[in-house]
Each structure stands twice: as C-alpha cells, then as structure tokens.
Length: 176
Image: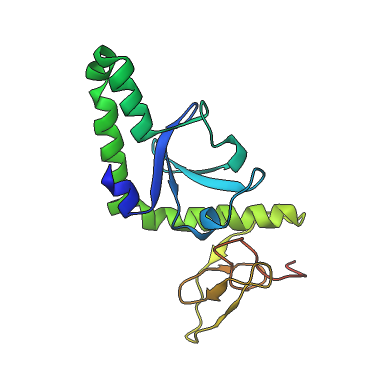
C-alpha cells in the first residue's frame, strides 16, 4: 500500500459506501482540520464524490485499509485467507483511481465544493465552465486567499468568476 503515501491518499472501508478514497491533493481536503469541516471522499463503487464531516472520519464509520487488513490477518486469520480478495480489490481500486479516474473526478469534486459554497450563501447550484477566453487571468480567492488561475481552474457559469478549488467560492456578492 505504498501507493497511498506516494500519492498522498487515504483509503479505507466506509460502513455504507465500502471502499473509499480521501485525496489529500484536493485543496479542500488539505485545508486544516476540525470537527465540523467537510471532507470530500470518492466512492470506489461508482467513482462519485460524497461529503462527510471530519468528526465522522473515525472508526467504526471508517476503517483505514492497512489497519483493517492487519487486524483481520492478526485476529481472524481464517477469515483473512478467505477475504484476500479485499486486499486485491483495494489495490485494484487504488491503481484505477490514480491512473484513470482522478482527472475525471476533479471536475465533479470541484462542482461539489462550489455547490456547497453556493448552498451556504442560499443560492441554487450552478454548473462550472472552462474559460473560452484566450487571455489568462490569475488572482486570489477573496474568501480563503488561495491563488486561482483560469487556465487551471473552472469558472462559475453564472458570474464568470474563477472558482476556488480550496473553498468553492466564486464572486463575493451578486452571483445572481
């Protein structure tokens, strides 16, 4: 499971969603720690993004893949031998995520973060668009001060502001 550290990922079993991945490379998952802060997970079963509070990211809700497999091997060796497919599935999902799915999921991930931000402001969800302008725009997010760049980041379809990949913010006011 050295792929986890190498790619800055956490993988484990969720009580409802089975195998899940927390990608710490996504800015919103790397923005400090705290009980009421949202984390964005990827479900390996359908490669969709779901959110959960940081305070819920504990056992028995989530079990880290390495600890789960070590505990199973140590405490229930017969069951571990029967369930060796668990480890094989985890490795398969991890490799698929890294090689094929991550870049596709980034768009869904950013859409989820942006719509969470809009919901907090009492606004309806919006689509994200890629700039059609030939001119590069760089700035910083008014909300969290992270840098934004229209050649990398997407824009809010409504206000045309660059959406921050860390907090999901677009225009401070009047994104109507």
